[in-house]
Amino acid sequence: MMTLAAPLALATIFVATLYGFQLRRKRTREALLKQLELRPNCLLTRYPIVFVGGPRSLFRPFDHWNSIPAFLREHGYEVIVLDPPFRKFLDASSVAHALKQLTTRAHVIADSSFEEEMEELARKGREVTTASLTLVRNRVRSTKQVTGSRLEDLKPFETALEVFEIDLLRRDAHFGQGDLLAVLALKLHNLFMGKKAVDALETGEIFTRTPWTVEARFLDLAVMLAERDAMSFQPETR
Image 1 (cartoon, helix red, strand yellow):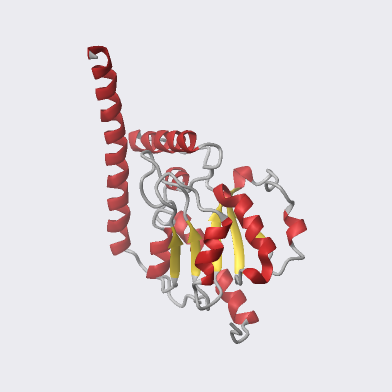
Image 2 (cartoon, rainbow, N blue to C red):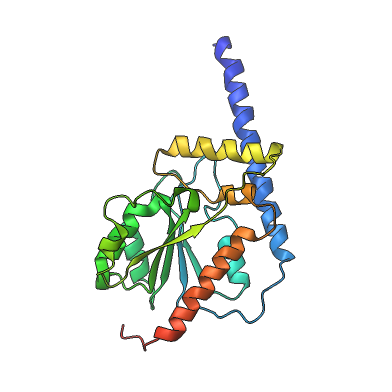
């Protein structure tokens, strides 16, 4: 029994350190939001933006999308986050059910961990009345074919699945201790959750040093969706 005490204590300290580190990063993001300077004259979407959250674990216990939803809310967008239970994955049916509870269409955004389910939502067509479906991928993975069907095979459906690439990789990035802890926590989370947990946006805060770089990319996406809403608006029939 004594032989297990030391490894157990070390494991507990290790997990507690990672948890405390991520808690501190969460609080840092919240403090930064209070100092946020808003971009003037932002065109707002007619429909809410729905982010599909990824699984959480001991190594990634907080928001899957970090401060991106809060950043868009501060700019006036209506944002909804669908978070799965702890250590669980959302499926297409549960997301479709949540969307049906809305009184309007929605712009749905998910990352590569929800790739197959986004294809299924695209195939549902009128059954799930969405304004758009956007799959976020890191550009380093952009050559990888979408699992299952090709993207062009989904274009005939009423809501096509579109790809939004974010280029986060910087070869000249210099890592500090906090960055190494973030990478370690992310790798352990992905290992713990299995192959489905990929392309977490935590890397964006490591590879980009300028504040709000990743969030600004999503603001550009939101403005693009708003422009599309303005050009194609038709009165709701639901």
